[in-house]
Length: 495
Image (cartoon, rainbow, N blue to C red):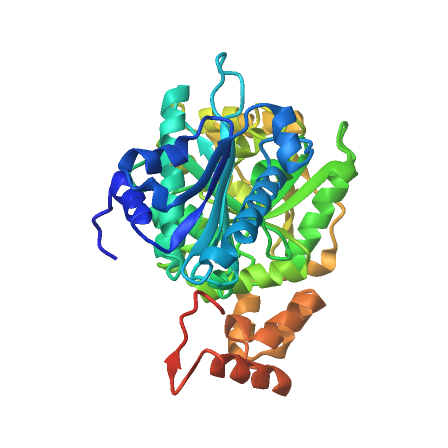
């Protein structure tokens, strides 16, 4: 792709001059910031079937139906459905053979007069890539970071134009489409923490990979998806919830990973003000971990995602290597208790002062930030297989100059030893399990949950060569479906 980014004016004009594109704009809150660009650059009559803005809740309900919240995904979906269907019903017979219809919508809460609200919004487009084509759709969630209303509205308008341009001209290159969303902007002004592609134009797109791209490209510091592969908006999942996080490589998911999480969950549920029915558990993978061997390997990433999905886990991809930054991120969404579970080895690394050289206050500043909201660290023991000795919170070796700080955190209950663990799993180490898989040592199956072993064998993950015959046949069929005569069909990340 040419590194020169077209201006917002040029993008809007190119859309206006494309005779195939015709549709509606519906914007709730923050003004008609996106459609204004198309009116401003000229030739809008060839693009805009209708433009509308609904500020009043009663008016919005009358048009799109009642909704509990007005800045939410459901409201956006209702808007896209109604506006797109109206265009097709009214105009298909007249111009359907030559027109690819679309509906753009957003529902946004920009900075209010007193500066007391959350500045965010949902934005999306439902469109036909070609005349008479089946529908495709892109939905994003944005956070406006400018400190005044006018600047937020300006940034919102630019993102909207970028989204429309990407949908029309870059739908065959989802990577480039995502990268283009912040053209003529910066991550200091806009954050995009959720994107979802659906429909015929994106039938080969894996939205988990697209979530990874958001973080990889710096459009967001974190992204989330469910065990079913559904992209999640973090605020909607974490809002007013107790949160338990396990950070790991999950390469592969082992009995230790699941035992650590279960032991931490049992302990966390005993805390005051922790409701088991209002708890979210997350498996977190950091970008640093994904880049451990250099460039990110998408097949390796999806292998981890699929094995976590087999265990029913919600996955958080983050660029928060430092735990205090992870804690601050989670604290944005809830005032309830947050806990992180880790092994004793990771706890030892946590007290390595080298990791905090960028902070003026060093490790003290880091821990002050991390534990300020009553965060808990639950520690899983580490076994020395030669001696059978366990490293725990009680006997962890800490540098002498940090010993009093460590003891203070333990005495306050900020760092707690897990006791409800299964001793049978303490001899499992993920690196060794991975090596067993690669070498064809069948013993690896005893170190992972059965559902994980099944998906690894069936999909040939992590170098596993013991696929069942029917799995190999399915893999051949899938490979052949990619194209004819050795020429691949235009797909995006179907692994």
